[in-house]
Amino acid sequence: MRRQDLVGLDVLVGLTYFNAEGEVLRQEQFHGLIEESEGGMAWVRPSDGGERRWVPAKVSAFRPAPGGTYRLASTGQVVVEPTLLTSWMLTLLNKDEDGKLHYKVEPNFAPLSHSRVPLEWKVNYTMDDGRIRRTIEAFGDEYVGRTLLLGINYTGPDGGLRRQEQIVGTIMVVDLVEGIVVSCDPDGRTVVLPSDPTWVEKAPPAQYRLRSTGQVVTNPDYLADITIRQPD
Image 1 (cartoon, rainbow, N blue to C red):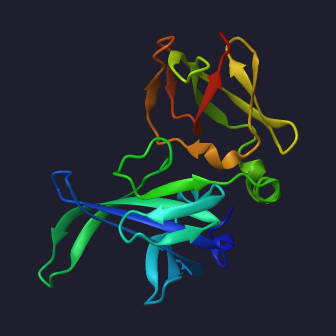
Image 2 (cartoon, one colour; image 1 turned 180 degrees about the vertical axis):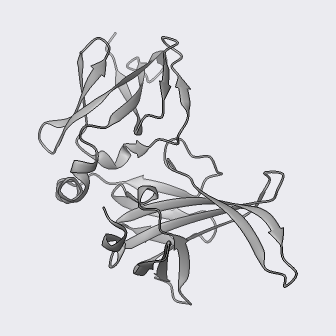
């Protein structure tokens, strides 16, 4: 996706403000239509009215939203089926002599499964094959060939956790019928995930040490978690 491709799409935005010591000052969430994207900023017209709001236009921080409803933590507003999600962290740097505040701005890349900020919205997920198909058509190519760090939780029939495993691999296929096919390193086994790619989130740049093996993975492209319920 290019920056200009954002225009005309609706987006759910989360903004978390921190002081210089890293303490949360406040959070805001809003939904709206992206009307303009240029100069490193995207301008969003809130769906509940009011003036346009700006959001940093780093394309990698905009991701397809899982289908369903979202109840916003700051207002209680319920947003139905947003197209995109983006979440940002703004840390106060200083206030100039005119009273203008200056912030360091960073994307919160994985706001659903590995968020670095307090809860922004409560998601009531709805699986819809038509929506998943449209998401794959629009975004599927962005996943293929990318590195995925996958956490697997194995549970018993009652949901009790039995063991955990972390693996890394390459996304080979994203398809409504075939699912998300991952070729794992270094053993070459294949893992197939459910077909909805909206739960595969952009990974924050970092080194990740896998608890199950001790392997260190540097800057994977994506993160995901799945739960496998095993019989007795």
